[in-house]
Length: 476
Image (cartoon, rainbow, N blue to C red; front, side, top):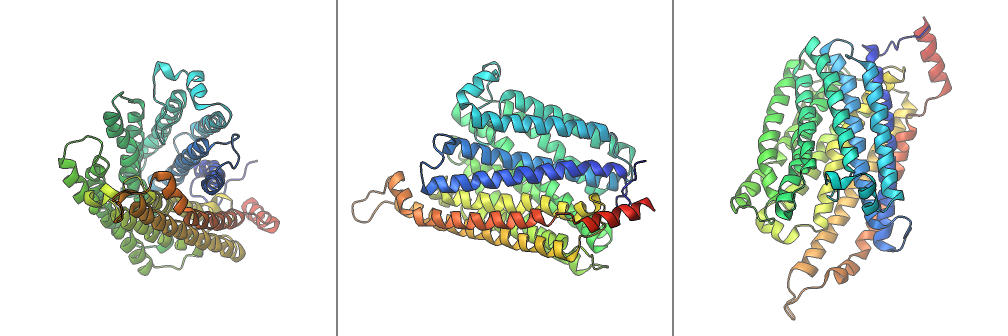
């Protein structure tokens, strides 16, 4: 006889667990390939020709996208039934889609590693509908089609759950963000021959994901966790959420213009992109106020200290990475010099980690003890290890950002500003030689991040007594 998990409100929430576990496995892979790339920056022939730099980078960025998508899907499967106050429409469909998506993701990564990219394009019939060869969207066309099928099945599953159940602000914002994620991915199938038009529509996927609809998903996940760990009235949380998503959509959509500065788009984007992207830090700062205000008003002291720390930490780090570091080089007169420099890499690393990696880990931290049948929180030893992981990863990412920022400033000075002596600037390769110390420091910080991730993963290690106690309680 199967014993239902007494720590879940609905049994179907359990389908979130494999999504979370696989997401963390892919996260580990992403960091390993990040370390490989970091070494290749300073030891150019490391693992060459087995894993060339372009392949390592492609795997690193694709793993980032895929593990976050698994995290978002797991989060939806966990919170939507609880918000809708009913079982998931089809747990079986969720399990089938998990294996389809996981298999497609693994085969795609193996394709990157084992087959030359041009050969992979021929092997997967890219000439029939050319979509490959664009940054972040390197997936073969057949993989992209598989992603669409998985997305449609996923949206159907949670959509039917919502239609038949309670509608809340949190669930509707989450659903809106997920629908937007699926809709904007369709632009990845449009690959015009004109490079300017290609980049114009390419940003409809990349920017409108990370600075648009993903912010809705982040806001809904954060609001859900804050409701659960603080006990604050849902109406208060929802008012904050309405304001945050309104600002995120207005600034995020029009802020797309800061990618159109130098690709042949009309000059009006210099103004629109500068003004509205300069306002993009506002919703992230509102999230900081939101989290700390809710925790300050809490009606209960939640036993999961680690989840509370993640909830606060993600808002602060997202504000710094997406807000402050984004603003540093978003104005057109500044971006003229900084575009595509290491400052972009600094912003990208802290923004992705703070806004999206951390919110997924926030929800995993809250939900995983329940999914594992432990209760509201793991034991103190596990929480302490997880908190160590939080601080090691966060401080290491801050250091990575600072080192890349210093490298970016030096790059602009050496490569993009003419010398006072002869009116010329250094070439790209000579400039990179001058930045080696920053890349070594970045690599050292990356090792620190890996150690922090190991602490985070080991914090989920279940002790035998814990399992036995949970099973005994459930059997009663």
